[in-house]
Image (cartoon, one colour):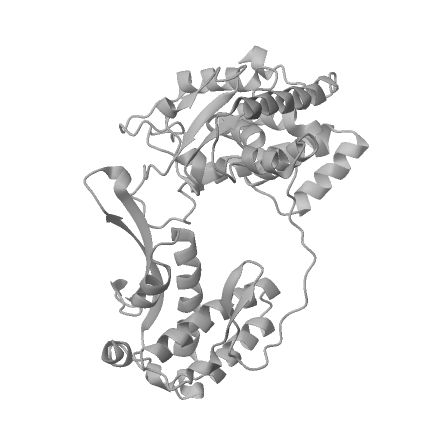
Length: 408
């Protein structure tokens, strides 16, 4: 391996840059056995051609069994570093991998800080580079003593301390991400979704009252979604279906984080009506059996879902600004200038439940953070929470209770 890393495509090859390359690997005969992996390629910027580079072995050896998102995060961090080396190889006097040193890693991390990268971003790059330099050292490419890499136990497991010199991290920035939509505006959001982005209206409902992630929605099957499971609740079987393995340039969110059965609460029969309306209007034409499809009848991607959601977000903010009360206009201003997207559904679900659950286990269970059980006690708790949440909306008559369900 030492010869491959050190001699194939050294840094003095002009006209090239490193890129990430998503690939699907089939581990069986069925489509569902395909799994997406992230590799590192070398691209000729003139001819627009690329090959898989041997440095991909770094990703394979460290994160082969992890999710595509994890692989992609570290691959992207390493690609950014390697392209930084290519751009500055004359100044840094680097030709081969063996010319790299910990000082180069320190220079890169400080360069990130000087170029307005967030503190959290710099720390993520530092973690990737720590593994990369340790890997090169174990391969014998770099002459770095192993005692430079100290493994310690942290609150979330073991990790390697940074071997790099002084890194000037940027100051912490105030978080401008909104994690919860005020409950008052949930019915309005659903109405606007039906009017402006009907293909995902059911999905938004399932996120707010079931805590589903986008990737989980994009892997849901029509046949695996059952209603009237318990007092009208929906029960969704979530597992990675890999409907769109034809798409390589993906953000990595088209997958199910954890296979499970997930309950979606039935509130005022809204979910039931949205579900029946959805399966009547939208059916796959590609044989996938996907619950959510695009305008061509093919399984929808997370990117398409987010585009629909952005339209809903923009329409809602504009509506509140134009027709809302003074308080609504304040909320609209906040929503317009804060960062929020589809994940606000899961955050809203969590916050709604947090007021009603009796213990942390119930909350983790409803979010799908623990193994699914079928005990009578759990079903009783589920129904208790559903009734309490439904009562919250009963107190809102005359505000934004949607006639949506009657009209559509």
